[in-house]
Structures are given as C-alpha cells and as structure tokens.
Image (cartoon, rainbow, N blue to C red; front, side, top):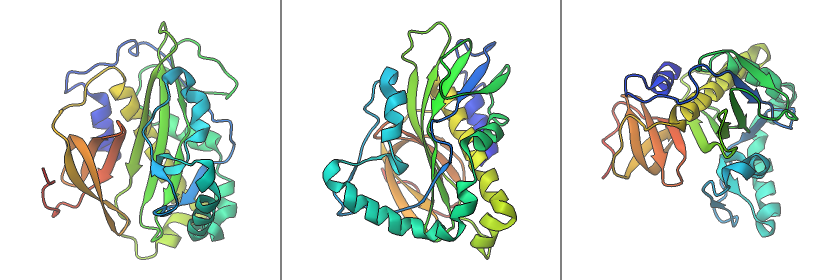
Length: 277
C-alpha cells in the first residue's frame, strides 16, 4: 500500500510538480496533545451527528483542528452527551490495551513518519509553539480508529501546508486512509504483541502516506479527474460506499476525492465488481 501511495505522491510521471518545495526544508509541527488519539470505530446513526466537510479557512484551521474529532464528525452541544456514550462503548475494544496506547506519543509517531515523507531537503519536527519559518511548515492532527473486529485501522488527518513566501493561508485538506483487512488469525496478538510494535509501525506508515498525499496535491492535479461515482471499499469485515472521484486505481486500492473534498486511500478487493456510475 505504502509504495503505491508514495508513487502517487511523487507525481513525476503525471507531470505534476510541487512548486517552491524543490529546495525547501520541511517542518512537521507537533500537536498540542501528547498522546496519539486512538479510538474504536463507533456508529453514530440516530445520535444527532452528521458528517461535515472541511469548512474552515486555512488561516484558522490550526485552531480548528482540535474541534475536528475522529472521522471528521463535528458534534453540536445537544448531541455531545449521547455521542460520548456511544464512543465510550466503541472504545471498549481497545480498553485492555489502553496502557500501551497511552504510552504512544505524537513525538514518537511523527518522528517515525517523518523518515518516510517523500519531500526533498532536510526534515524536522517543530514544537507546537513554533511559528512557520523557512521551508514548508506542516500542521496536522492525526486521529486513528480501530474497527470493532480489529481487522482494519482508519486514519483521519486534517493537514495544513504553508509554503515559504506565501500569504500564510496555506493548503488545507483532510486525508483518510483505511488499511486493507487484516488476514492474521489472531488480530489481537498481531497488533499488540511486543508493545504494540505492529500497530505503531502501521500508524507511522499511514501518517507518512497522508502527508505525502497532501504534499502531492498541494500545487498539482491528481493523475486523473473524472465524474463522481459510487465506489465500494472494505473497512475491516464491512463493505462501505463512497460517492467520489477516482484519482488513482489499482487492483486492491483506490485513491479518491469524495464530495467533501477529502482525499481517501481505501482498499478494494480484486474480485469486487466495478464501481457503479
């Protein structure tokens, strides 16, 4: 998965370039929170919540990232209590491993991811209190969620990229990445043995992929544009549907831009029927 996403991120074959990034350094800003956000995937049907697009202007997005919770759902005050109860129940799937997850910091996650970011020049972490300096300045608030069957991990990452010499507004996008369904016989052991090393490694790869997609899309076009269509994909043992443009297509993975403008990298089984027009 990562190789295909990185190939799209390079975009050289598609003739798309990253303006101002060729010689620039990249600074990845740490979030204000210390612990990586990790939840169980919850169903909010009937809880008074709705999916929301990224409505924040880029200059204000950094402050708005904290309001964007897992899976891009914005919660109003009347639904918050009900949503919190539903989320707490969903988080139960991870409760036996909460101590391990609470020890997983954004500093550790982002340092591992930064090594996989396909951008030229030196790359470094920036403290939350840092201000944009020379080079690309990237802000993000990655949140992870595990399916209830423990077969897939979902990342939602709102990202802002500010280029040197710009007007400070930057480029803003939300990237969602869904892993292919895990085939291991015992997903608990796979994810959480050895201090959850497999889960930490997967999380770092997903974060790097999301950053690569955002950087690639910042000043360029996707390899292919097309009409909106209904696309099937897998999220653990469930089949999901998304109305989206297909930007890149492989046997087992699609890169989409959905109706909200999000970029989505999702798994599709080879034997799946073609997307419905």
